[in-house]
Amino acid sequence: MIKKTLSACVLTALSALTALSAHADPLSYARYDQVRTTDLYLDLKADFNHKILSGYAELTLNWIDKNARTLVLDTNELNIAKVQVLAANGRWTAASFMLDKLDVEKGRALRIALPFQPQKVRVYYRTAPSAAALQWMAPEQTMSGKRPFMFSQSEEINARSWAPVQDTPAVRFTYSARIDAPAGLRVVMSAENDQKATGAGGWKFKMTQPIPSYLLAIAIGEIEVRNLGPRSAVYAEAPRIEAAAYELADTEKMIAAAESLYGPYRWDRYDMIVLPPSFPYGGMENPRLTFLTPTMIAGDRSLVDLIAHELAHSWSGNLVTNASWKYMWLNEGFTTYVTTRIVEKLYGEEVAEMNLQVEQEEALASLATIPPAKQVLATRGPDTDPSAYSDGGLIYPKGAWFLRTLEQRAGRDVFDPFLRGWFDQHAFKSATTEEFVDYLKKNLLDAHPEYMAQAELDEWLYAPGIPTNAKRAASPRLAALDAQRTAWLKGELPTAELNGKNWIALEWMHFLNDIDGKTTAAQMQELDQAFGLAKSGNNEIAYRFYLSSVKAGYNVREPLNKFLMSVGRQRFVVPLYTALLKNPADKDWAKSVYVKARTHYHPITQAAVDKAFKK
Image 1 (tube, rainbow, N blue to C red):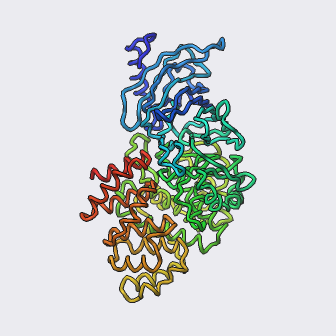
Image 2 (cartoon, rainbow, N blue to C red):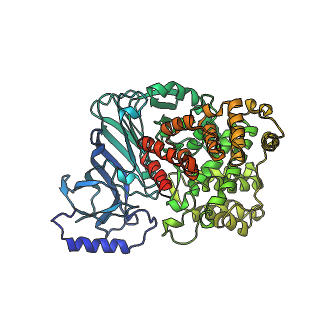
Image 3 (cartoon, one colour):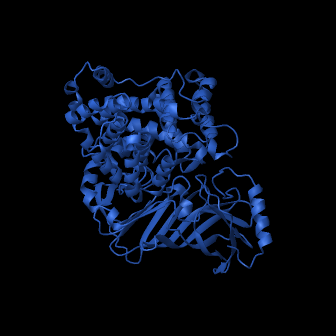
């Protein structure tokens, strides 16, 4: 949209000049070398009938380039009504703006032409029903079946679909909000949540620690809360709240364990919300309110390493953030390493070692499906080509493996203070691979080059695969299990003699990973009859059992149908549909299930499954 107060030709020139200017994050239009957002205020109304948020965003600005007169924000499918600037006399006055042509991946740049450098700018807008970050759920998609539900998923660049922001992890800002929602629904955000609030006059929030835009989060629904300790609580739909509170009972212990390793928790509270099953990920580390999949509720607290992972992000990711998505391993690789340390602190070395071995084995197995160019942790040179980014799944275990290698060689007495120093010195900042390498050399390798030579460091960061000298975790318990599995696959050990009734979830996950694609339908049937795997309440186990069963030709359609209709976690549903589509006997059935299930999935998951069907 072009305002008449500024000619189209001038706006076109502004657009061309901005496009020519180099900036660090290729997934953002924002010129944060000229001006940065320091604070954001959202005043929005949730309209479930039309599936939109509407209102305004007020941005407080820090002008870096004193000659700049254009503010560029990221948007995607936002309908911009007007833009105002705060004048020196305290009045809000209209500003001219334009929206660039749509880019399918990045959305549209909102370019605001300014006669001076205002401290504050307001953008009045509404979201689209198809906003990439938001899922609007009908009552029948919720547990009660009575009221609707909505939640967001802003990572990586979807915050721009529900707020006009500088949508890059390089820019951090504080924020506050006032949200109007229908009576009877609670609003929660990644900010201070007042448990006693009623929503009268709008639900109000304040986040005093600066965050990047991808950590903006909101959820609205029939939500209850249970306190877990003095600084932690869980939110969930009423029918799920008690199970969630039971599963997350060790949260306070986890916080204390992490603090003992890496310093004080700096976000005041660690609350969580267990979302409806359509949430596409295992968890999202939104500060003060981690978003969780209900698939982590197993009834026996066997999947709490997921909570440890999201909590670990309070140091690696939320506290020290990748400066752009090129450097995502600084978030996820570090967090995966810290997760194992928290698990070991709480549940012992034996459980941590099993967890680590499963993690490393899955990493090595994934190399066969990832192009070598995508197997690197980092890339050299300008951050200009988003397609050159590393594979999102591999950077978790590979980054952790790299840090563990350094830990093993330096010893924890040296490495733990080193890592804590990284968090302390870069707290509430965004960092690059180059900054970490510089810190690593100055604080560890320059004094102890024997820990890792430059050639090996380069191999970990810039070469594909896992270095051949990487030390692999070896759990004695999993070694004993491996012997049973090998004998069972050969038919030398009867199914009834497997020690499965004494295995914990990690052991079952390891067993099922290693029989994937190697069994017969009869063997899968025997496993099911002996251990009831098709009806497992542990979704990690059930997923792996269904996947192996489909590949073996064992009919699990009834429980699998229920699973696909009720679970929307992308990591589960995409491989299952992919396996079904490869089997001619299952292809039509898979299509019939997806027709019914698609509306239950988040748009992110829908896009991934749609892609699998198109192939």
